[in-house]
Image (cartoon, rainbow, N blue to C red; front, side):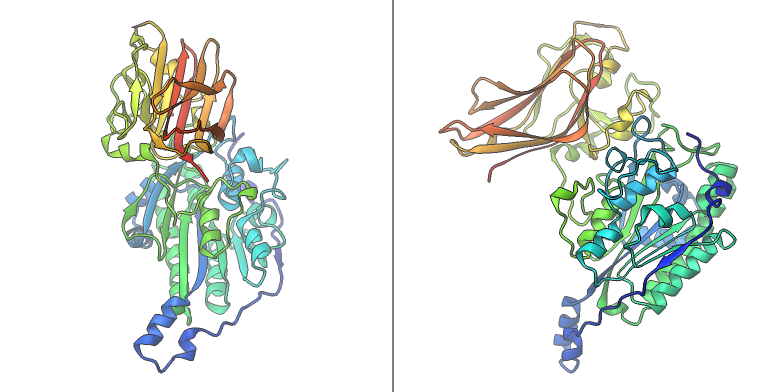
Length: 512
């Protein structure tokens, strides 16, 4: 599916749909205690009003932002969080704006919102609505506003339930989008705002991401981001407000220009975020595109209902797993040649308490994938593109992979037979426990994936078997803990020949 160009995105007649903005007037503890000196300051801090601003920079690459003259974005990174990330590729969806912005705005991946291109055919926005619509549903008194330089965002992705949706006329482009956002932030009282700027993507299509014109477009967008952030900070009530500001992108660009394919550069995105819960100058690798919507909802005090099926999780509430602790131990490529030598991305050393049993594993083969390995998206997907590794969307940061397909690409003996073994988790006997983990499995016979559990060091018993393709998802397995048992250990055994792979991440065992 070809990427859309600037001219094609403006074929639709711009539209403006709005309802009268609603404003909520609160009597704060500060106003009631204005003469209370230090106590007033404490009261004011306690009642700061949460507000959200999301700025989308279409087609922006984080590394090129760092290369460009972008003082406002640099200041946001210094003041808060920088989180490089990556997205999917076909067959889940191409790296186009329709799927990309739908993922950011709804908080779910394309296998749920079902946007596969820029036509939005078959979209499931009724089931998975935009985050501003969820704000309106949960807290209708809040004021919501969206303005975009690419009309489908405000015409199609955001629903009419949003208080004000503005599709900027093509003649005004990002200048008009910026001026409208600034006016709304200065002259009204919005609680949740989404702004989309487009010119970086236009420069990418016209000149390529390696060009000076692309850097110049980033510089221009940076100035507009500065105007928007300055409008927030100039608000009369700013001292009594708690703003979460997030900047993100829908996809990247190739050096030559364009997107839609499966290269890591096209799959690049990021979050730059500042807010009261985010440490200045922090960098994280566990953040994904759907987290923007989830973070906005959480900041506004809207409880995320598991029934919504969101894939995002609030960036303010990090949930690292054992594998993530390995990022500092990752090594550069050994036998692989397609992975850039600069990327640190694999280790065979498990985290504390974990082990890998390779006693039945064949010898030789590609070093990186000899038995269970711990790796990252940016490393593993470049081992071989377009074999669906890019669809491993629900694993985060460092994950475990058994990849018989890649292991077989060098002389070897025997077969792939490796078992990933968890620490012993405490349990109470005679009750059920819940095993959860993220998985992604691609099958070709005679390959098999098997989950086994053992109690108090006893014989492992199979609780789940994989012999057919399983898309990226979170698995939940109920365990019947025997009476008297005090610990449980989980094993993930992968066996096969020159077949496919199995990904495991986020392993947890809980008991009510």
